[in-house]
Amino acid sequence: MTEHVDVIVVGAGLSGIGAAWHLQARCPDRSYTILEARDAIGGTWDLFRYPGIRSDSDMHTLGYSFRPWTQAKAIADGPSIRDYVRDTAREAGIDRNIRFGHRMIAADWSTPDACWRLEVERDGARIEMTCNFLYVCSGYYDYATGHAPAFPGAADFSGRIVHPQFWPEDLDYAGRNVVVIGSGATAVTLVPEMAREAAHVTMLQRSPTYVVTRPAHDKFANWLRSRLPARTAYGVTRWKNVLFGMFFYRLARRKPGKVKDRLIGMVREQLGPDYDVATHFTPRYDPWDQRLCLVPDADLFAAIRSGEASVVTDTIETFTRDGIRLSSGKELPADVIVTATGLKLTMMGGARLSVDGTVVQVGQALQYKGMMLSDVPNLAFTFGYTNASWTLKADLVAGYVCRLLNVMRKRGLRQATPRVDRAGVTPEPFANFSSGYIERAEAILPKQGDRKPWRLNQNYALDVMALRFGSVDDSMEFSQPARARAA
Image (cartoon, rainbow, N blue to C red; front, side, top):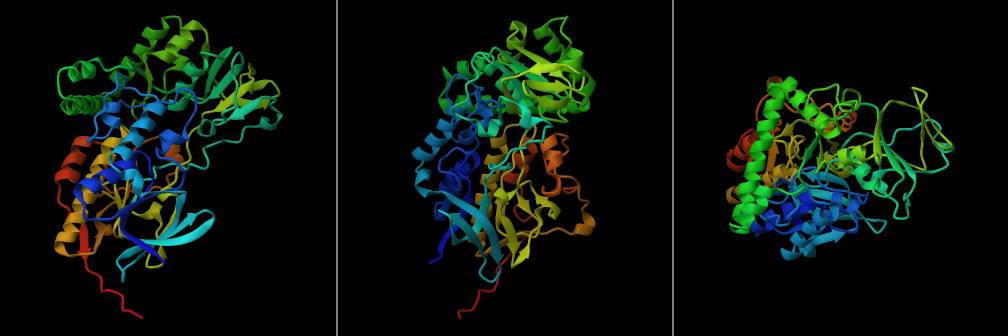
Protein backbone atom coordinates (compact mmCIF):
# COMPACT_ATOMS: atom_id res chain seq x y z
CA MET A 1 0.00 0.00 0.00
CA THR A 2 1.11 3.57 -0.71
CA GLU A 3 1.90 5.48 2.46
CA HIS A 4 0.56 9.03 2.75
CA VAL A 5 1.65 11.88 5.06
CA ASP A 6 0.77 15.56 5.02
CA VAL A 7 4.34 16.80 4.53
CA ILE A 8 7.43 15.00 3.33
CA VAL A 9 10.74 16.67 4.17
CA VAL A 10 13.70 15.55 2.05
CA GLY A 11 16.99 15.51 3.96
CA ALA A 12 17.92 15.14 7.64
CA GLY A 13 20.68 17.71 7.71
CA LEU A 14 20.79 21.14 9.29
CA SER A 15 17.86 22.39 7.16
CA GLY A 16 15.69 19.28 7.39
CA ILE A 17 15.87 18.98 11.17
CA GLY A 18 15.10 22.69 11.48
CA ALA A 19 12.13 22.31 9.13
CA ALA A 20 10.78 19.43 11.19
CA TRP A 21 11.06 21.44 14.41
CA HIS A 22 9.03 24.27 12.92
CA LEU A 23 6.41 21.86 11.57
CA GLN A 24 6.00 20.28 15.00
CA ALA A 25 5.79 23.65 16.74
CA ARG A 26 3.60 25.56 14.27
CA CYS A 27 1.61 22.86 12.44
CA PRO A 28 1.07 20.22 15.14
CA ASP A 29 -1.99 18.87 13.32
CA ARG A 30 0.08 17.85 10.29
CA SER A 31 1.84 14.54 9.92
CA TYR A 32 5.33 14.60 8.46
CA THR A 33 8.15 12.26 7.53
CA ILE A 34 11.79 13.00 6.74
CA LEU A 35 13.38 11.01 3.93
CA GLU A 36 17.14 10.71 4.37
CA ALA A 37 19.14 8.99 1.64
CA ARG A 38 22.06 8.23 3.94
CA ASP A 39 22.04 6.36 7.25
CA ALA A 40 22.78 9.26 9.60
CA ILE A 41 21.55 12.67 10.72
CA GLY A 42 23.69 15.69 9.92
CA GLY A 43 23.88 16.11 6.15
CA THR A 44 27.01 18.07 5.26
CA TRP A 45 28.31 17.84 8.81
CA ASP A 46 28.13 14.07 8.80
CA LEU A 47 29.38 13.55 5.24
CA PHE A 48 32.51 15.69 5.40
CA ARG A 49 35.22 14.17 7.57
CA TYR A 50 38.39 15.86 6.32
CA PRO A 51 40.90 17.20 8.87
CA GLY A 52 39.86 20.45 10.52
CA ILE A 53 36.32 20.52 9.06
CA ARG A 54 34.59 23.54 10.60
CA SER A 55 31.97 26.18 9.98
CA ASP A 56 32.80 29.19 7.85
CA SER A 57 30.09 31.17 9.64
CA ASP A 58 29.67 31.91 13.32
CA MET A 59 27.44 29.47 15.16
CA HIS A 60 25.25 32.23 16.56
CA THR A 61 23.87 32.65 13.04
CA LEU A 62 24.51 29.15 11.69
CA GLY A 63 22.73 27.71 14.72
CA TYR A 64 18.95 27.45 14.93
CA SER A 65 16.91 30.46 16.02
CA PHE A 66 15.04 28.24 18.49
CA ARG A 67 18.02 26.43 20.06
CA PRO A 68 20.87 28.56 21.44
CA TRP A 69 24.46 27.65 20.65
CA THR A 70 26.07 27.57 24.09
CA GLN A 71 29.60 26.36 23.43
CA ALA A 72 32.47 28.79 23.90
CA LYS A 73 33.73 28.48 20.30
CA ALA A 74 31.74 30.54 17.81
CA ILE A 75 33.63 29.04 14.84
CA ALA A 76 32.90 25.40 15.54
CA ASP A 77 34.39 22.14 14.32
CA GLY A 78 32.38 19.70 12.24
CA PRO A 79 31.81 17.04 14.94
CA SER A 80 30.42 19.68 17.33
CA ILE A 81 27.98 20.90 14.69
CA ARG A 82 26.95 17.34 13.88
CA ASP A 83 26.26 16.70 17.58
CA TYR A 84 24.26 19.92 17.77
CA VAL A 85 22.00 18.81 14.89
CA ARG A 86 21.61 15.29 16.26
CA ASP A 87 20.85 16.54 19.78
CA THR A 88 18.21 18.88 18.38
CA ALA A 89 16.54 15.98 16.57
CA ARG A 90 16.68 13.68 19.59
CA GLU A 91 15.46 16.21 22.16
CA ALA A 92 12.48 17.22 20.00
CA GLY A 93 11.61 13.63 19.06
CA ILE A 94 12.24 14.43 15.41
CA ASP A 95 14.50 11.40 14.99
CA ARG A 96 11.44 9.12 15.31
CA ASN A 97 10.11 10.54 12.04
CA ILE A 98 13.22 9.95 9.92
CA ARG A 99 13.34 7.19 7.30
CA PHE A 100 17.01 6.45 6.73
CA GLY A 101 18.14 4.88 3.47
CA HIS A 102 15.23 6.48 1.58
CA ARG A 103 16.24 8.40 -1.56
CA MET A 104 13.65 10.40 -3.50
CA ILE A 105 14.11 9.53 -7.17
CA ALA A 106 11.14 11.33 -8.68
CA ALA A 107 8.09 13.34 -7.64
CA ASP A 108 4.97 14.00 -9.74
CA TRP A 109 2.24 16.41 -8.68
CA SER A 110 -1.29 15.17 -9.33
CA THR A 111 -3.76 18.04 -9.62
CA PRO A 112 -6.90 15.84 -9.33
CA ASP A 113 -5.54 14.30 -6.12
CA ALA A 114 -3.84 17.51 -4.91
CA CYS A 115 -0.82 15.52 -3.82
CA TRP A 116 2.71 14.58 -4.73
CA ARG A 117 3.44 10.99 -5.75
CA LEU A 118 7.02 10.16 -4.84
CA GLU A 119 9.14 7.38 -6.24
CA VAL A 120 11.53 6.44 -3.45
CA GLU A 121 14.48 4.07 -3.51
CA ARG A 122 14.83 1.90 -0.40
CA ASP A 123 17.16 -1.09 -0.04
CA GLY A 124 17.55 -1.29 -3.81
CA ALA A 125 13.81 -1.41 -4.42
CA ARG A 126 11.33 1.30 -5.43
CA ILE A 127 8.36 2.25 -3.29
CA GLU A 128 5.69 4.92 -3.66
CA MET A 129 4.78 7.54 -1.09
CA THR A 130 2.37 10.46 -1.31
CA CYS A 131 2.12 13.80 0.44
CA ASN A 132 0.18 17.04 0.20
CA PHE A 133 3.28 19.22 0.49
CA LEU A 134 6.87 18.47 -0.53
CA TYR A 135 9.63 20.31 1.33
CA VAL A 136 13.12 19.72 -0.12
CA CYS A 137 15.92 20.35 2.40
CA SER A 138 18.63 18.33 0.69
CA GLY A 139 21.06 21.20 0.19
CA TYR A 140 22.55 22.25 -3.11
CA TYR A 141 25.36 19.85 -3.90
CA ASP A 142 25.73 16.28 -5.07
CA TYR A 143 26.68 13.98 -2.19
CA ALA A 144 27.78 11.23 -4.59
CA THR A 145 30.31 13.22 -6.63
CA GLY A 146 32.40 16.34 -6.09
CA HIS A 147 33.84 18.66 -8.70
CA ALA A 148 36.98 16.88 -9.83
CA PRO A 149 38.73 18.26 -12.93
CA ALA A 150 40.74 15.82 -15.00
CA PHE A 151 44.41 16.59 -14.35
CA PRO A 152 46.91 15.45 -16.99
CA GLY A 153 49.32 12.81 -15.75
CA ALA A 154 47.21 11.93 -12.70
CA ALA A 155 47.60 8.22 -13.45
CA ASP A 156 51.38 8.59 -13.27
CA PHE A 157 51.41 9.96 -9.71
CA SER A 158 52.83 7.38 -7.30
CA GLY A 159 51.19 8.78 -4.17
CA ARG A 160 47.54 9.16 -3.15
CA ILE A 161 45.04 11.59 -4.64
CA VAL A 162 42.04 12.34 -2.42
CA HIS A 163 39.01 14.61 -2.65
CA PRO A 164 37.92 16.20 0.65
CA GLN A 165 34.31 15.12 0.12
CA PHE A 166 35.43 11.47 0.32
CA TRP A 167 38.21 11.55 2.87
CA PRO A 168 39.74 8.08 3.43
CA GLU A 169 39.99 7.02 7.07
CA ASP A 170 43.32 5.27 6.46
CA LEU A 171 45.15 8.25 4.95
CA ASP A 172 48.48 8.75 6.73
CA TYR A 173 50.13 12.04 5.85
CA ALA A 174 52.38 12.41 8.91
CA GLY A 175 55.89 13.43 7.89
CA ARG A 176 54.93 13.62 4.23
CA ASN A 177 54.75 16.36 1.61
CA VAL A 178 51.18 17.39 0.85
CA VAL A 179 49.85 19.59 -1.94
CA VAL A 180 46.33 20.95 -1.53
CA ILE A 181 44.90 22.16 -4.84
CA GLY A 182 42.45 25.00 -4.28
CA SER A 183 42.02 28.29 -2.50
CA GLY A 184 38.49 28.14 -1.12
CA ALA A 185 37.05 27.44 2.30
CA THR A 186 38.02 23.77 2.25
CA ALA A 187 41.62 24.46 1.24
CA VAL A 188 42.23 27.16 3.86
CA THR A 189 40.81 24.77 6.47
CA LEU A 190 42.88 21.78 5.41
CA VAL A 191 46.25 23.49 5.08
CA PRO A 192 46.85 24.58 8.71
CA GLU A 193 45.33 21.40 10.12
CA MET A 194 47.40 19.04 7.95
CA ALA A 195 50.51 21.15 8.56
CA ARG A 196 50.44 20.04 12.20
CA GLU A 197 51.60 16.53 11.15
CA ALA A 198 52.85 16.75 7.58
CA ALA A 199 56.45 17.49 6.63
CA HIS A 200 55.16 20.41 4.58
CA VAL A 201 51.85 21.50 3.05
CA THR A 202 51.62 23.58 -0.11
CA MET A 203 48.39 25.32 -1.07
CA LEU A 204 48.46 25.43 -4.87
CA GLN A 205 46.02 27.95 -6.27
CA ARG A 206 45.26 29.16 -9.76
CA SER A 207 44.17 32.54 -8.37
CA PRO A 208 43.86 34.06 -4.87
CA THR A 209 40.77 34.32 -2.68
CA TYR A 210 39.93 36.90 -0.02
CA VAL A 211 40.93 35.43 3.34
CA VAL A 212 39.64 37.03 6.53
CA THR A 213 40.73 36.13 10.03
CA ARG A 214 38.37 36.14 13.00
CA PRO A 215 38.66 34.93 16.61
CA ALA A 216 37.28 31.41 17.12
CA HIS A 217 35.75 32.61 20.40
CA ASP A 218 33.23 35.45 20.45
CA LYS A 219 34.17 37.26 23.66
CA PHE A 220 31.03 39.40 23.60
CA ALA A 221 28.80 36.34 23.25
CA ASN A 222 30.54 34.48 26.06
CA TRP A 223 30.42 37.54 28.33
CA LEU A 224 26.74 38.08 27.56
CA ARG A 225 25.88 34.44 28.22
CA SER A 226 27.44 34.68 31.69
CA ARG A 227 25.05 37.50 32.58
CA LEU A 228 21.81 36.78 30.73
CA PRO A 229 19.60 33.74 30.13
CA ALA A 230 20.99 31.60 27.31
CA ARG A 231 18.15 32.32 24.87
CA THR A 232 18.31 36.10 25.44
CA ALA A 233 22.09 36.22 25.11
CA TYR A 234 21.92 34.08 21.97
CA GLY A 235 19.28 36.30 20.39
CA VAL A 236 21.25 39.47 21.06
CA THR A 237 24.47 37.97 19.68
CA ARG A 238 22.65 36.59 16.67
CA TRP A 239 21.26 39.97 15.70
CA LYS A 240 24.56 41.68 16.43
CA ASN A 241 26.30 39.35 14.00
CA VAL A 242 23.54 39.59 11.41
CA LEU A 243 23.62 43.38 11.41
CA PHE A 244 27.40 43.51 11.24
CA GLY A 245 27.39 41.07 8.33
CA MET A 246 24.79 43.13 6.48
CA PHE A 247 26.75 46.33 7.12
CA PHE A 248 30.01 44.80 5.90
CA TYR A 249 28.40 43.33 2.77
CA ARG A 250 26.73 46.65 1.91
CA LEU A 251 30.00 48.51 2.48
CA ALA A 252 31.84 46.05 0.22
CA ARG A 253 29.31 46.63 -2.54
CA ARG A 254 29.31 50.41 -2.21
CA LYS A 255 33.05 50.91 -1.72
CA PRO A 256 34.75 47.78 -3.07
CA GLY A 257 38.13 49.45 -3.50
CA LYS A 258 38.39 50.57 0.10
CA VAL A 259 37.20 47.24 1.47
CA LYS A 260 39.62 45.38 -0.79
CA ASP A 261 42.52 47.51 0.44
CA ARG A 262 41.57 46.87 4.06
CA LEU A 263 41.20 43.11 3.61
CA ILE A 264 44.55 42.83 1.86
CA GLY A 265 46.10 45.10 4.47
CA MET A 266 44.94 42.73 7.21
CA VAL A 267 46.70 39.86 5.42
CA ARG A 268 49.86 41.94 5.15
CA GLU A 269 49.70 42.62 8.90
CA GLN A 270 49.68 38.85 9.47
CA LEU A 271 52.45 37.91 7.03
CA GLY A 272 54.72 40.91 7.19
CA PRO A 273 55.96 43.46 4.64
CA ASP A 274 58.30 41.03 2.85
CA TYR A 275 55.63 38.47 1.94
CA ASP A 276 54.33 38.60 -1.65
CA VAL A 277 50.74 39.43 -0.76
CA ALA A 278 50.14 40.93 -4.20
CA THR A 279 50.65 37.54 -5.86
CA HIS A 280 49.18 35.15 -3.34
CA PHE A 281 46.42 37.04 -1.50
CA THR A 282 45.18 39.75 -3.88
CA PRO A 283 42.15 38.49 -5.87
CA ARG A 284 41.26 39.78 -9.31
CA TYR A 285 37.63 40.36 -8.30
CA ASP A 286 35.90 42.61 -5.77
CA PRO A 287 34.95 41.47 -2.24
CA TRP A 288 31.75 39.41 -2.16
CA ASP A 289 31.77 38.70 -5.89
CA GLN A 290 32.66 35.37 -4.35
CA ARG A 291 32.32 34.20 -0.77
CA LEU A 292 35.08 35.30 1.59
CA CYS A 293 37.14 32.58 3.30
CA LEU A 294 37.23 32.67 7.08
CA VAL A 295 40.25 31.49 9.06
CA PRO A 296 39.74 31.39 12.84
CA ASP A 297 42.53 32.74 15.00
CA ALA A 298 44.64 33.34 11.86
CA ASP A 299 45.68 29.67 11.83
CA LEU A 300 46.48 29.66 8.10
CA PHE A 301 48.79 32.64 8.44
CA ALA A 302 50.47 31.13 11.50
CA ALA A 303 51.23 27.97 9.50
CA ILE A 304 52.72 30.07 6.69
CA ARG A 305 54.83 32.17 9.08
CA SER A 306 56.21 29.05 10.74
CA GLY A 307 57.28 27.55 7.42
CA GLU A 308 55.03 24.51 7.89
CA ALA A 309 52.90 25.65 4.96
CA SER A 310 53.33 27.77 1.84
CA VAL A 311 51.21 29.16 -0.95
CA VAL A 312 52.04 28.79 -4.65
CA THR A 313 50.03 30.67 -7.28
CA ASP A 314 50.43 28.97 -10.65
CA THR A 315 48.69 26.58 -13.05
CA ILE A 316 49.25 22.85 -13.44
CA GLU A 317 51.05 21.50 -16.48
CA THR A 318 50.91 17.87 -15.41
CA PHE A 319 51.08 15.50 -12.49
CA THR A 320 54.32 13.56 -12.36
CA ARG A 321 55.42 10.44 -10.54
CA ASP A 322 56.67 12.44 -7.58
CA GLY A 323 54.41 15.48 -7.55
CA ILE A 324 53.20 18.28 -9.81
CA ARG A 325 54.97 20.17 -12.58
CA LEU A 326 53.66 23.72 -12.95
CA SER A 327 53.33 25.87 -16.05
CA SER A 328 56.23 27.98 -14.77
CA GLY A 329 58.43 24.88 -14.85
CA LYS A 330 58.61 24.59 -11.08
CA GLU A 331 58.20 21.13 -9.54
CA LEU A 332 56.18 20.60 -6.36
CA PRO A 333 57.14 17.36 -4.57
CA ALA A 334 54.18 15.51 -3.13
CA ASP A 335 53.37 12.23 -1.41
CA VAL A 336 49.69 13.18 -1.08
CA ILE A 337 47.62 15.45 -3.33
CA VAL A 338 44.29 16.79 -2.08
CA THR A 339 41.98 18.11 -4.79
CA ALA A 340 39.97 20.75 -2.89
CA THR A 341 38.47 21.79 -6.21
CA GLY A 342 34.91 22.38 -5.10
CA LEU A 343 31.39 21.04 -5.21
CA LYS A 344 29.10 19.76 -7.92
CA LEU A 345 25.70 21.37 -7.52
CA THR A 346 22.38 19.65 -7.92
CA MET A 347 18.82 20.76 -7.27
CA MET A 348 16.04 18.86 -5.51
CA GLY A 349 18.48 16.20 -4.42
CA GLY A 350 18.84 15.16 -8.05
CA ALA A 351 15.21 13.97 -8.23
CA ARG A 352 13.02 14.42 -11.31
CA LEU A 353 10.07 16.75 -10.81
CA SER A 354 6.91 16.79 -12.87
CA VAL A 355 3.44 18.32 -12.68
CA ASP A 356 0.64 16.15 -14.02
CA GLY A 357 3.20 14.17 -15.98
CA THR A 358 4.96 17.20 -17.52
CA VAL A 359 8.62 17.40 -16.51
CA VAL A 360 9.61 20.52 -14.60
CA GLN A 361 12.74 22.15 -16.00
CA VAL A 362 14.03 23.68 -12.76
CA GLY A 363 16.64 25.72 -14.62
CA GLN A 364 13.88 27.45 -16.61
CA ALA A 365 11.56 28.16 -13.69
CA LEU A 366 11.50 31.38 -11.71
CA GLN A 367 12.23 31.16 -8.01
CA TYR A 368 9.57 32.64 -5.74
CA LYS A 369 10.80 34.37 -2.57
CA GLY A 370 13.93 32.24 -2.77
CA MET A 371 11.99 29.11 -1.74
CA MET A 372 9.39 27.99 -4.32
CA LEU A 373 9.18 27.56 -8.11
CA SER A 374 6.83 29.23 -10.56
CA ASP A 375 3.92 27.03 -11.67
CA VAL A 376 4.90 24.21 -9.30
CA PRO A 377 2.26 23.62 -6.59
CA ASN A 378 2.85 22.78 -2.94
CA LEU A 379 6.63 22.59 -3.09
CA ALA A 380 9.29 24.51 -1.18
CA PHE A 381 13.06 24.21 -1.07
CA THR A 382 15.85 25.59 1.09
CA PHE A 383 18.78 27.41 -0.47
CA GLY A 384 20.76 29.55 1.95
CA TYR A 385 22.49 32.88 1.52
CA THR A 386 25.74 33.28 -0.38
CA ASN A 387 26.74 36.20 1.85
CA ALA A 388 25.57 35.00 5.27
CA SER A 389 24.86 31.86 7.27
CA TRP A 390 22.78 29.16 5.59
CA THR A 391 20.49 28.66 8.58
CA LEU A 392 19.31 32.27 8.65
CA LYS A 393 17.44 31.65 5.40
CA ALA A 394 16.48 28.08 6.33
CA ASP A 395 14.71 29.27 9.48
CA LEU A 396 12.75 31.91 7.59
CA VAL A 397 11.72 29.46 4.86
CA ALA A 398 10.52 26.95 7.46
CA GLY A 399 8.44 29.61 9.17
CA TYR A 400 6.91 30.68 5.85
CA VAL A 401 6.05 27.10 4.87
CA CYS A 402 4.19 26.71 8.16
CA ARG A 403 2.32 29.98 7.59
CA LEU A 404 1.36 28.83 4.10
CA LEU A 405 0.14 25.44 5.32
CA ASN A 406 -1.95 27.03 8.05
CA VAL A 407 -3.53 29.53 5.64
CA MET A 408 -4.45 26.69 3.29
CA ARG A 409 -6.01 24.73 6.16
CA LYS A 410 -7.94 27.76 7.41
CA ARG A 411 -9.31 28.53 3.94
CA GLY A 412 -10.04 24.91 3.15
CA LEU A 413 -7.83 24.94 0.05
CA ARG A 414 -5.49 22.19 -1.07
CA GLN A 415 -3.21 23.79 -3.65
CA ALA A 416 -0.90 26.82 -3.59
CA THR A 417 0.97 27.69 -6.79
CA PRO A 418 3.26 30.69 -7.43
CA ARG A 419 2.11 32.29 -10.69
CA VAL A 420 3.90 34.93 -12.74
CA ASP A 421 3.03 37.00 -15.76
CA ARG A 422 6.23 36.29 -17.65
CA ALA A 423 5.68 39.29 -19.91
CA GLY A 424 6.10 41.51 -16.90
CA VAL A 425 9.14 39.88 -15.28
CA THR A 426 12.61 39.79 -16.78
CA PRO A 427 14.48 36.56 -15.92
CA GLU A 428 17.97 36.94 -14.51
CA PRO A 429 20.60 34.46 -13.26
CA PHE A 430 19.83 32.86 -9.90
CA ALA A 431 22.63 34.64 -8.05
CA ASN A 432 24.93 37.55 -8.78
CA PHE A 433 27.92 35.49 -7.77
CA SER A 434 31.05 34.56 -9.73
CA SER A 435 32.11 31.49 -7.73
CA GLY A 436 32.93 28.53 -9.94
CA TYR A 437 30.39 26.17 -8.38
CA ILE A 438 27.58 28.67 -9.09
CA GLU A 439 28.70 29.40 -12.66
CA ARG A 440 29.10 25.69 -13.46
CA ALA A 441 25.52 25.03 -12.32
CA GLU A 442 23.80 27.99 -13.98
CA ALA A 443 21.80 25.74 -16.32
CA ILE A 444 20.17 23.81 -13.45
CA LEU A 445 19.56 26.70 -11.06
CA PRO A 446 16.18 28.44 -11.24
CA LYS A 447 16.12 31.99 -12.53
CA GLN A 448 15.20 35.04 -10.51
CA GLY A 449 13.10 37.98 -11.68
CA ASP A 450 13.81 41.68 -11.73
CA ARG A 451 11.14 42.51 -9.13
CA LYS A 452 9.45 41.16 -6.01
CA PRO A 453 8.51 38.46 -5.16
CA TRP A 454 10.66 36.89 -7.86
CA ARG A 455 13.76 38.86 -6.93
CA LEU A 456 16.20 36.93 -4.76
CA ASN A 457 17.08 38.84 -1.61
CA GLN A 458 20.60 38.32 -0.31
CA ASN A 459 19.50 40.29 2.72
CA TYR A 460 18.21 38.77 5.96
CA ALA A 461 16.28 41.87 7.07
CA LEU A 462 14.39 42.06 3.76
CA ASP A 463 13.59 38.37 3.97
CA VAL A 464 12.31 38.76 7.53
CA MET A 465 9.81 41.30 6.21
CA ALA A 466 8.90 39.20 3.16
CA LEU A 467 8.72 35.74 4.72
CA ARG A 468 7.79 36.39 8.33
CA PHE A 469 5.44 39.35 7.88
CA GLY A 470 4.70 39.59 4.13
CA SER A 471 1.45 38.46 2.53
CA VAL A 472 1.12 34.83 1.48
CA ASP A 473 -1.24 35.95 -1.31
CA ASP A 474 1.49 37.83 -3.18
CA SER A 475 1.57 36.22 -6.68
CA MET A 476 0.21 33.01 -5.11
CA GLU A 477 -2.73 31.19 -6.67
CA PHE A 478 -4.75 29.19 -4.16
CA SER A 479 -7.15 26.59 -5.56
CA GLN A 480 -9.29 23.62 -4.72
CA PRO A 481 -8.80 21.03 -7.49
CA ALA A 482 -11.74 18.78 -8.20
CA ARG A 483 -11.17 15.51 -6.43
CA ALA A 484 -10.46 12.50 -8.59
CA ARG A 485 -13.46 10.18 -9.06
CA ALA A 486 -13.27 6.73 -7.56
CA ALA A 487 -12.86 4.04 -10.17
